[in-house]
Each structure stands twice: as C-alpha cells, then as structure tokens.
Length: 241
Length: 300
Image (cartoon, rainbow over all chains, first blue to last red):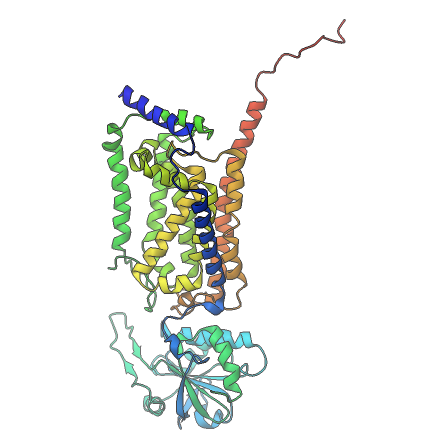
C-alpha cells in the first residue's frame, strides 16, 4: 500500500517536472482549434438576431415574404348576422364593409391555438402603433355557445385587447359562417368527470382587405409576431402579392 | 413516458411526467458515488500525494473535506435532478424560456462546479488515470482553451437558430443539455479540476479567469433583453403556462435570470476566492519579522 502511494506520488512529481512531456498537440494545431472555435462563436453570434430565427413548422421553400397562404380567387366574408359581446346584432359582412378586418373561429376556454393567435396578433398591432395595419378590426367568433356568452367574451378579450370584437350566436348561424369559410365542422366534445370538454375548430385566420376579400389565409397558431408586423401593413393597404 | 424532454404543442399540465433518461443519468451518477464509497476507494491507495502535487504545481491546498464534498454532492444531485426532470425540463424544453435559462444556470453555474468540488482526487485519478485521459483534462483545464470553448458553447446554446430546432425532438434537447454539461465542466475545470495531476488556477489568476468568463453570458442576455420581438419561435408559439406571462415578458425574465442569476452565482465564487486570496496574502505578510540590521539609534 505504502509502496503504491509512493509510486503515485512519484508519477505526480514526474509529470510536473517537464510540463511539455505529454502534450502531443503542437502550438499550430492548438491555434487552429482555437481559431475554428472562435469562428463558430462568431457564426453562432450572428444567428442570434430575431430575423434568423427558424420556424420549423412551415416549408422554408414556400417563403414568399408572407406568412399566410395565397388563395385565388379571394374568399368572401360570411353573410351571417351574429351577436356581439355587448348583446347587439352584428352583421359580419355589413359592419366590416371596406375595413381591414380579421375573422377567426375559436373558443374562450381554448388552451392553445386561440390564446396564441390572439395574443401574438394583439402584440403585433401594439408594435405597429400607428399607420397602416394598426387599425384592424379583429372579429373572434366563440364557437362554444354554451360557454362563450357575451359576458365571457368581454372578460376574455378584455384581457387581450380592448379593440377586439367577440361574437356569438345560435349554433346553426355559427356553423353556417364556418362553412362559408370552408373550415372543417365544429366538434363539441363529451364532458369529462369535471364537466370540462374540448372543442374542435378550424385554425385559420382570415384577413379581409378593403376589397372585402381574403386573399391570404394564415395558420393562426403558427405566425410569429414579427411576421404579423411585416404582413399587416401590406394587407391593410390591399396588397397580397 | 418519454425518455427525454422536448417541445410539445400540447397545453401545459401540472400532471407529473418523469423522464426515463434523466433517471438513468441520476442513478448512474449516484451508483458511481456509491460504488466509490463502498468498494472503489478501498481498492485505491489513499492519495496523500494530492497535497504534495498541489503544492508542486503551485495550485495551493485543496480545502475540501470529505464532509463538505458529501454536502456538495448532495446539492449537485438535487440540482441535476431539477435540471433534467419534470417540471423544469418540460417547461424549459417547450413552454418557457425562463425555465430553460434556470436549467442552464443550474447546470453550468451550480451542478458542474459542485460535481467537480465533490469529486475525490483518487476517483478523478481512477477515472482519468495518468495517460491520455490526463492529457485530455489538462487541455480542458487550460484557460486559453476553456475560455473560447465555454464561450462558443454558451453562445451557441442560446442562439435561436440552434435552440428552436433542437428542442423540437428528444435527441436534439438531449444534445442541448449535453452541451450545457460540457460548457459547465469546461468553464470550471481551470479553477476546480479534482485531478491532482492538473495544475489549477489560484488566487488572483483564478479571479481574473472567472471575471473573463463572466463576460460571455452578457451577449445572449443583451439580445434577449433588447430584441424587439420574441427571438425563440418555440416559446413564442407555445401554449401559455401562466396567463399574462407572454413571450416577450418570458424572454426578458430569461435574460434577467441569465444576467442577474448567473452573474450572482459566478460573482459569489469570484468574491469568495478573492477574499480567501486576500486573507492568505495578509497572513503571509504578518509572519515573523526579520530583525532589523544596522546600528540602533535614539535610545540612550
């Protein structure tokens, strides 16, 4: 035991006497390694900016400078009258006539798509501040008629943006509006033991320009704030190409 | 049950969901410690040479006692578990940049130095020996290599172009976590290497080295604080965990965790080492004085 400890001690001391004795790397190789490391740091640092952030969910080859998909011919607004969150009748087609408006079908108890879309859009409008794209009429149709009452819509949208409009109405009218926008049917799930249930709804957001047509359709939960800031002013001016 | 955390488009739930990979790593580390405690160390000579080697290298005495190493190991294991398992790992991989940053700080600034502190010198010798393994950790413990490697890794693991695709899959998220471990060990090796065959930085040199390392996290933190938009698509388009805690607030909180939390932990180390060095200098300066040579003056 004592001999072995002494051997170890000797090894330690031997290895300290000549600091270059076990360094196979030459100075040139070391400098090359350090240089390539620094080059990688620079490359990684350059990619820190928000403009280079990746978005893996969309096909990068399809990037034409818009986050929404082009539809031709443009879609018309649904010809349906619902009830707004103050209990007044609201004709989607008439009351948004000639305005830059967004239409989306969701529900206030939605845990993912709806809050992501609404919050991202609201923050983007705030960022734009003034000018084209800042004065957008956002219509949110609550498809879960049992829970999306006018009062609930007021509370829900009030926490996101005071300018957003909540709409509700008879199930048949909402389903008809949904159908006119070529969305999949709304599916109300079975309640669980706690009375909670899921609602299946389309994930598309429809921006209508001054010509009252939607020329591009947006995947509501997959558009980033910076993309809204880029697209909204163009859409507000009637551009879509 | 997944083997490793990754981002998910599912709404966040507080229902526990442990990760197999995390527990395998925890049991492996704990198993190594138990093996060493029961069997390994009895097969090795007591490494009295450690102190001699440390002095030989001019790296000073190793102040850690077995008890303090045990305590450090306990905290390191708690930190490791918190980093790798639900809920912090799940939150960090797919919902909150803040949680991801807490994990990073825990791994780099807490777990790595505590593990190095807790590792007994004979175990380090057993693991790395005196041959090529020692050569490797000697290189890792050189500041000229540790500074760029740690900087590269820490900048890369915070770059959106790297983070967003990696956290999307368990393999990618594992690679990211592995990069943190690598960065943590490389960062602390020059001042905390447990192998007696590796010279450590001490005193003013160690303090200077750690001050230089404290500059690196400022760069990602700067981008996260001042970016006009959320820089990570993963966290921007994730279902919200807390109402009102949106992507921008989350990102700014993450930057604060990196800059304030990370800096705090690093500067505690810097201050502690500086004070220890200062007291050592005072003690050396207050040793027995040499008698003054020359004729006495003044007294009658």
